[in-house]
Image 1 (cartoon, one colour):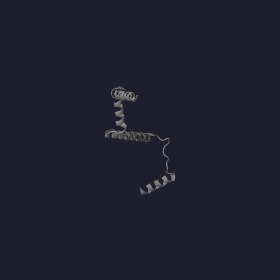
Image 2: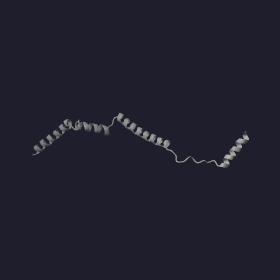
Image 3: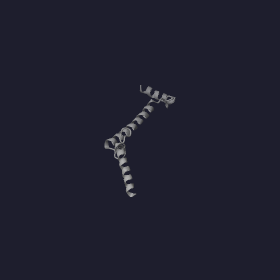
Image 4: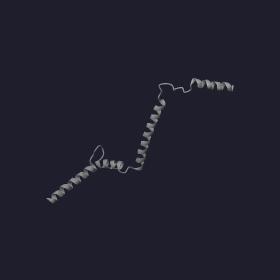
Length: 100
């Protein structure tokens, strides 16, 4: 009985190995899919890390640029309030008249 279990489990392991190496899932073997996932997530190359960092910076800059364009392009509802009173304007006009 022990020998039969050993043979069955060995055959299953070999069958699984053959499927992982030779099977076709979306044009690639399952082993290729696992290797690509491992490289992307566990040990990304320096180039991929820099690329991901640049993508994050680029996205942040695009957001800032969009916000700046919105802030600059925004129209105010009313003109700015005049802070100089009529008395102040008369006083300035008198000073200018004295200088001439």
